[in-house]
Image (tube, rainbow, N blue to C red):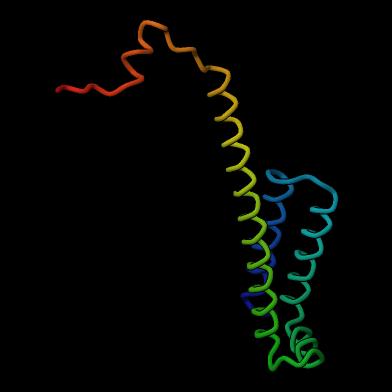
Length: 122
């Protein structure tokens, strides 16, 4: 066993622990995280397996395959986060509009003439 392998496995287990203790708890999310953590542990413990899979799919090295898959995963997560941000911005805008409408006041009739036309000095 190479010295980096236990460090990487502990890091993966730490990520899984933080995820399950602090973050999402939906069942399909848990299955996805478990799949990626187990895949990571397997590839760390058996690095030749990534080279074999890379050869089968037509990539030169196992490291390249893992890097390509990581970049695809990062792009997907970035897209999900961007979509979530847009949804949150839309919800915030709707909330601000609702509060503004609820707090709207009618102008006084005495002040209405002062604000309706600009001062014209001739």
